[in-house]
Image (cartoon, rainbow, N blue to C red; front, top):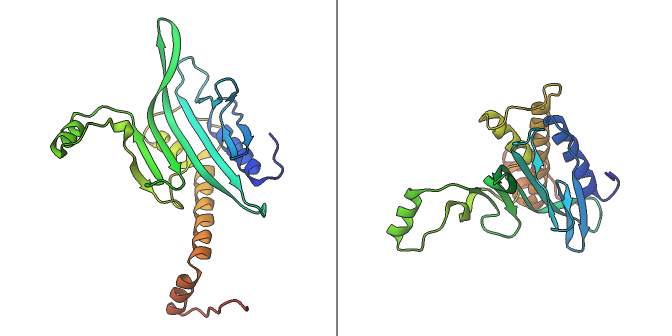
Length: 224
C-alpha cells in the first residue's frame, strides 16, 4: 500500500498495520480514490463496487469484520477528515451448500452532517419495540432501521474500541497471541481523543482561553 501523501493513505496504512496485529490472518486494506473522496476498506470488489468484509480467522465459518471509511484531505494537505465510516460484525450464511450474503449482527456508523452523526444499528427482532410503536400510533420499524445515538461528530466510537468490545464480550476469541494489540488499541484511542480535543480547542478558542484564565493561567490573544 502506498503510504506517501495524501494523509488519508497514511491513515489507511496505519489502520492496516493495527488490524494485522490483532487478527490471526493476513490483512490488506484497499484504497479507492474518487472525485468525492478516498475510500478505505477490505478487499475491493470492482464488479460490485463495494468492499468485501474481512474474515476474522481462517475457518470456513469465520465471522466477518466490516471496515469502511470515506476520507477527504483538506487543501493544505496537513489534515484529513472522516466523511463517513462503518464497521460491524457479520455472520456467514449458507443455504443449500452455497454461501449467501452475510447477515449483520451490529453496525457502528458515522455520517457527517446527519443527526445523530454517530449511531449504532442492532440487527435483532423485538416484540417490545413493536409494542412501543403501536402505543405511539406509528408504523412499525425494525430495530436495525433505528439510529441509536452513540456520540458526537468529534467524539465517537472507533474501530479500535469495537475490536476491544468483541474481545471483552467474547464474541471473538481467536486474536493473535504474539502481539500486544490491546495496548496498541488503547494507545490509538488516546491519540484519537487528543487530536479531537485539539480540534475542539481551535473551534472554541475564546471560550477555552476564558476558562484557562479563570483557572489562573495567563492567556493572551494572538497578535494581529
